[in-house]
Amino acid sequence: MTEGEGQFYSVQVGDSTFTVLRRYQQLCAIGYGAQGIVCSALDTVLGIPVAVKKLSRPFQNQTHAKRAYRELVLLKCVNHKNIIRLLNVFTPQKSLEEFQDLYLVMELMDASLCQVIHMDLDHERMSYLLYQILCGIRHLHSAGIIHRDLKPSNIVVKSDCTLKILDFGLARTACTNFMMTPYVVTRYYRAPEVILGMKYKENVDIWSVGCIMGEMVKGSVIFQGTDHIDQWNKVIEILGTPSLEFMNRLMETVRNYVMNKPQFPGVSFNELFPDWAFPSETEHDQIKTSQARDLLSKMLVIDPESRISVQEYLVICKMMERHTTLFIVSWGFSLITELIYKEVMDWEERNKNGVLKEECLGESLV
Ligand code: AMP
Image (cartoon, rainbow, N blue to C red; front, side, top):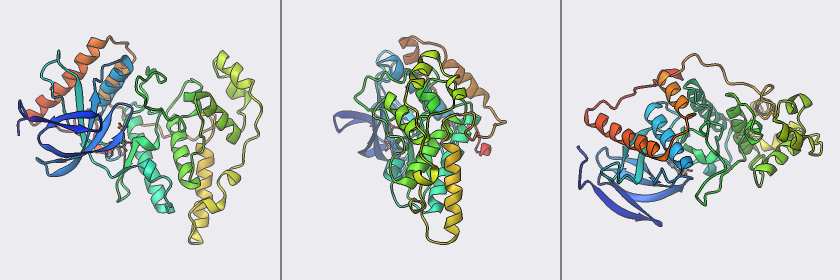
């Protein structure tokens, strides 16, 4: 099916108007994110349910524009069973001059991890979910992408326990505190390196996985800071004041602040995650409980040098490397708008020519 003029129709979703290709019917709001609204829909061409995400004027400011461009480029390239798959991209506007809205069509999942994380999960389901997060993360790392902002709202699941990561986290140069939307940024899962503005490596994402696992076990958020500063307070109150050696690696201003905090001894992992918090039906579960607690104690470590690391990956995708390097460059607005528009046109062109295949990364990585 060629999708040209007259192929669009408009429908009101909350206080937003979705102008989508006619093939997408029965739109229904399912989620709200930093960038816009997400709807479920029926793709009448493929006969499958899909998720349609509207990015309204993605280039309204530098932060939005960079994020939209990065997400679009990476979604087009990444192909892995634990990363959400992009099925289509379109804009109802017909020229770069008119370009306003960007729509991403993705496979539809059943719920976000937020809705599942506090359920009574057995060891098997819990470890399967965590395993899939790690597979997705490992794939991103292998492509040179370090997420740094992994959280339950950015992870979606299906009732068969399959899981996919929705986004690619913080761009290297992203200004993380500046958002023009009323959307509240969740920082509970951010690693000490991110909170304190330190150098980071792949195991920055292990911290977030540890927070998610801990929350699955405990049934509540582990480090629930009320703001950026309080996030650090919660971490040291629970895990204890970090070593002097760690503090010496901080920027001077941050170090002064961190060193002037009261000293905390921290809580033991047995206390933090008591036996009763873990699922336990059989005797064998006792072993799993101690293994799970042991894993938590290796993930939730303030100093990344002592935290367990993700394996080093041999395969680095050349194309990804190219794109991630691009993000370091500071762009002007018009250039980003043009780049996003080109990506949409490129998608349509490739679609027309039937060349929409896995171009960058194969499933073989994990
Ligand atoms: P996002 O704007 O990508 O952060 O998504 C906001 C919310 O929409 C998520 O937290 C999910 O609840 C929901 N959502 C996004 N994409 C999907 C999808 N492909 N399938 C199911 N739900 C989704």
